[in-house]
Length: 384
Image (cartoon, rainbow, N blue to C red; front, side):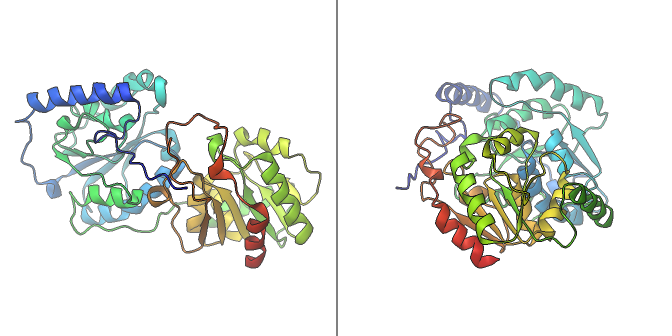
């Protein structure tokens, strides 16, 4: 059964009813007090631009899809990015931006703790930007105009996170669009001929691949070995396969193929891998042994990728390797689905969950993750 509930609540992407109510009151007062604030500025003439985005690795990878086009339209302009450590890692070596300003954000109730860090980061930068573009539409990014107003003469963003009265130009947020299309809507305000490009990372491919092969050899994977990548877990446990599902999938693949199975993840996922507890030399854990760039090279040389709804699904999209993604019911496929013709997404149809973004870290039914592993393995075997 599909639950087609809107994720917009009173025009905001703020689920908490109390916070939603408070922000509505603040905005009503703000729009009244700042109704004459709007300045006439030709955004296409900006010389110094600050792009603002906070989120995870996947958000950062999708964000790279607009950077080439922005640089093409502002070849001599200064383009800086204000972001957190995860996205900063994705943007490392990116030739389309000049500087990366890092100030981490803690989510949820810890959010107020980082306000002073953001202020300090902006204060230390002695430049006044002609324009700041706020890319995320949620509350954690919505409050950013409060701090940006002192460092940017003009601001563009969504009002769905609150404090829209501080923006000089607000862009409508449309449900059902991919996140990269939301990004494109924003940059169209500064360059009408801007377009989306394929998400990309920048690194020394030859050096990175050599480092990867050395790591794999130490783990018992030789250069000519055939292997499958399996990424069964996420920090958000609601997106993870159950231990039973992972064990069944691994055992069926080991019994029906001669491939090695490399299980990826961070040190956080290592506990999950240990719980699988299958003794087989062809099952190898690579948890926290490779960096993001090495991971992309690993995906490129693998025969197949199996993953849940997490960053690696987006990375697989640019790897070119055939990929099967187990999609959870808490994430909108239309907005967050990985890009790439090599991607096959399977879901139970329970999308979006009626309690999207409201459900607990672990719900009892997990109907959205009730996948038929036997049928999934058949799909995988047909692709090998």
